[in-house]
Amino acid sequence: MNASKNTHNKTKDLGKRQDEGGFLTAYKQKRDFKQTPEPQAKIKPKNGTKVFVVQKHWARNLHYDFRLQIKGVLKSWAVPKGPSLKENEKRLAVLTEDHPLDYAKFSGVIPQGQYGAGKVIIWDKGSFENVKTNSLDESFKQGRLEVKLRGRKLSGVYVLIRLKQSKNWLLFKTKKG
Ligand code: MN
Image (cartoon, rainbow, N blue to C red; front, side, top):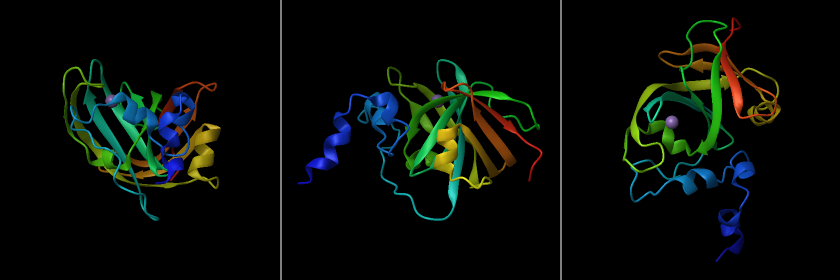
């Protein structure tokens, strides 16, 4: 048995962990997989195409979850008003815990009493590419991502900028691309 395999489950520092290493600790801690139909992490990343997904989520407050595949997980932001299709229309995007790649396929109803209870639909989905010279991971850590989305609703270059080292980011479409 490989003892080191389990060490990440024991970490107490979930806040830091959720942004590093793809361990999905926070995601797993928040959910009871006997109760929720949400996926556990099974899909492993492959080289090549990266996916994005936007889920519309009727939780306590309706919001849209914007997720980008970065370093083997879906980096995730809750966007109260949803991403805008108009250039330069800025939307607040609050960073939430990393989700497994499997989540890009999820729609359904999270039961009452569970984290994020409510209906989830896939609002848009597609592939994306990094338009910066820095890697996606570096750009994420620096708090400025620029990605070209190819979805049904969202297409073109979108920027995510972190505000002052907080969980709050701004999401908007740019004229580029
Ligand atoms: Mn949500």
